[in-house]
Amino acid sequence: MGNPKPMSANHLAHPLDFIRQIVADDLKSGKNDGRVVTRFPPEPNGYLHIGHAKSICLNFGIAQEFGGQCNLRFDDTNPTKEEQEYVDSIQEDVRWLGFDWDDRLFYASDYFEQMYDYAKHLIKTGKAFVCDLTADEIREYRGTLTEPGKNSPYRDRSVEENLDLFQRMRAGEFPDGARVLRAKIDMASPNINMRDPVLYRILHAEHHRTGDKWCIYPMYDYAHPISDALEGITHSICTLEFEDHRPLYDWTLDYLPVPYRPYQYEFARLNLTYTVMSKRKLLKLVQEGRVAGWDDPRMPTISGMRRRGYPPEAIRHFCDLIGVGKRENLVELSLLEYCVREDLNRRAPRVMGVLRPLKVVLVNYPEGQAEELEAVNNPEDPAMGARKVPFSRELWIERDDFMEEPPKKFFRLAPGREVRLRYAYFIKCVEVVKDSRGEVVELRCTYDPETRGGYAPDGRRVKATLHWVSAPHARPAEVRLYDRLFTMPNPGEDKDADFLAHINPQSLETLKPCWVEPSLAGALPGSCYQFERLGYFCLDKDIAPGGLVFNRTVTLKDAWAKIRQRGKS
Ligand code: ATP
Ligand code: MG
Image: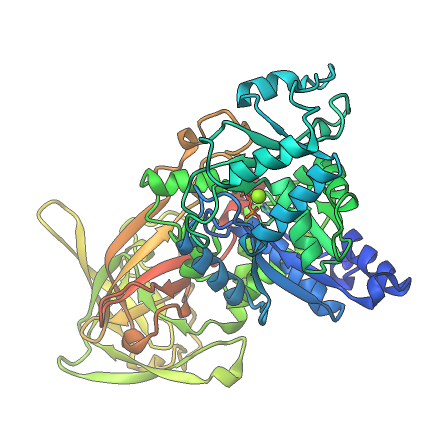
């Protein structure tokens, strides 16, 4: 998707995507007794990212739209990588996105006993066997895409021997890797997933929920269909890489006496430019200290986006716009930013803050005097009202808004030139003060008392309006400016390449001290503002009492789209 604003009639009309179409058709034909049950099945081995948001919006969205239910199920079958911290963060993130699983919070590990019984059923019916080949040997015997595999020499063990060995695997008699339980399907199948896949492995590892109760763990391909069946899932929706696993999903359910028969449907995962989306890579960024943590505002994680100030509504809108299809795609980060900007434009209060301050002294404004001027809180929403901002003799303006020798198209402040201060007065620069190195350190200006409110009674015009704050009233703040985390559009493209080589060394710029208007003194962590003319900023969650640290959520305009445009023409 190359277009940052795909607001086509298509999207506005919300046609059903192919999965919703299947659900609608099933409802119409009376399949599943009119029930719709989906699930979101994260593995608790990392924090959720924006790709997961797509899956969450799809699964919970379908349940909402079709009067069904969506379960939250932790796919916790791999104890070495899973942690309670991840379980907690995942729940927080799903809730924050605006979805609710009521009392339907499940864990695959809740079903371990049932899965074990089902495995014995497969053994008894001749559909599974204990195999003593090593992992390397299993790989060797498996064959390739062009050659069939070979049967394991252990394939024809008796049911009794298999049952005995499987029970002893569970009892902890064998070390890790000594034996596995495998399905007995077809070593010549063109689908490698069907060549006697492993169902259980021995792993003497502490599980975050079941502790040391188990030392054998089911594989995903075996655990997932059973979990779906036990929960009465009607539509088991997952990403395309599981398409080749669907025959095994179906096989498992066909040969087990499960209480319910779910079906799997696959859609294309979300990929986003200038970031990576695999938990393994995100974990690496965290572990190597390339970012400050899972919730670093540069991360594509939901917690990172929350900290950065992305509203959940904007993320949901984004998921809506990108739609659900079968084709692999790479979505522009600028589309997500567009959704964020659109949402915040409607809801974020406007304030004034100066990021790179330059002192202005109004030589004709009485010393010690101050006044309050009225400023509009949000021109998009009159109901948000107005506030008072203090004005005085000494002000901060943006250093960029002054040039001593302005080029032709620079209309802001310059020696001898008049500009408007937003909500305040016209001022004119009469003197430039420099330090010993020739750096401009202060501007001395006059103000026109007749222009209160920003308009001249004589109809005189100015070409620029600047934001400002009153120096004695302003609060110091730290502002963190973020840029994309990677310098190339698809850093995850080449799986073997070291994606860390493409990290953007300038993804964070910290500015301090910045000066913001005093109305921000009581701002709550997590609240978002538009700093006039600069962008949207969100008060960080980790601030000392009275401290002000802002994360820039997004710029006001899509500067990147413009630059790209210019590059093309
Ligand atoms: P990753 O590949 O990022 O490590 P995963 O697929 O291993 O993710 P899970 O915890 O298994 O992560 O994912 C939970 C659900 O979210 C699965 O149904 C998975 O298909 C879906 N999902 C994961 N990544 C994406 C994505 N980029 N786009 C859409 N859905 C995704
Ligand atoms: Mg997975």
